[in-house]
Each structure stands twice: as structure tokens, then as C-alpha cells.
Amino acid sequence: SKRLKDIEISVPIVYSTISFWLGKKANEYHSHKWTVYVRGATNEDLGVVIKRVVFTLHPSFSNPTRVVETPPFELSESGWGEFEIAISLHFHSDVCDKQLDLYHHLKLYPEDESGPQSTKKPVVMENYDEIVFFEPSESFFARVQNH
Ligand code: SLL
Image (tube, rainbow, N blue to C red; front, side, top):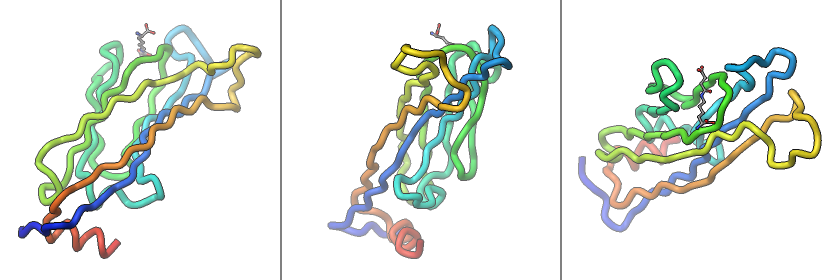
């Protein structure tokens, strides 16, 4: 549809990992349970903008390419090691044709090694970002207004 000159839409997002040590339930291959997610920084519904999110995990996981088609855009797994997760945002066709590739370090172990790791205190790694769409289409602009 028609593009709106002199207008830009800024979408604040947060992409994060949160991980819990499994404690007594830990074994060699599954020491932690973790979740990676993308959400609106002030809880906006990202489904208005994003059509699907592709999370690419370390090749040691079975089926390392994980596709999430609806919000919440998140994925939970268990494992033993830290690695870089590739997070590809695919937008609705009236938003943007190109995908946006983000990278996020999955952190399992706390920075402070002073005490034993607790199963109750998760390790959180959070990134804030803003996606700016210049000259948005009319339909995208209308959808954002109505939300
Ligand atoms: C490391 N470079 O050596 C990293 C690789 C890979 C972690 C970490 C697999 C779990 C599963 C898993 O946790 N891989 O097999 O289900 O520390």
C-alpha cells in the first residue's frame, strides 16, 4: 500500500535469555533450563510487526533451527553450555521485506562465582533495542495506531 512520507515508526524491543540451574536434577548434558525470547519493551504486541521469529541454536542441539510463528516469540530448552543464539525477525509483508538478524549470548553461569549456584536465582541477560521503520505503509501505520 501507499507509503507515508515524513513518518517513522519506532518499535522498542527486548531480547533476552533467562536460565535456571537444575541443581539436583542436573546431569552432564542438561545442567540448565533456559528460555530465549523477544518481546515489546513496554509490552507492545509484537505480532503487529513480526510475522515469525527464527532462533538458530548451536549445532549440538537436535533441529537447531526453531521457528516460532505467533507471539509470544520465545523458546525453551535445556542444555549444558553457553553459545551465541541467532534471532532472525521476519516482518509482515507491509512492514519490511528484509529480515533483521540479532545475536544474543546465552548465559548460564553467574558472573559472581563467590557461592554455589542457586536453582532459585536465574541468570538473566537482557538486551534493549529499537527498530525504526521509515516511510511506513498506510496499512502498517493504521495497525499500529489501532493497538
Ligand atoms: C561450549 N561453545 O563448548 C560452547 C558450546 C553447546 C551447548 C555449547 C546441547 C544440549 C543438548 C548444548 O547445551 N549445547 O544436546 O540437548 O561451551
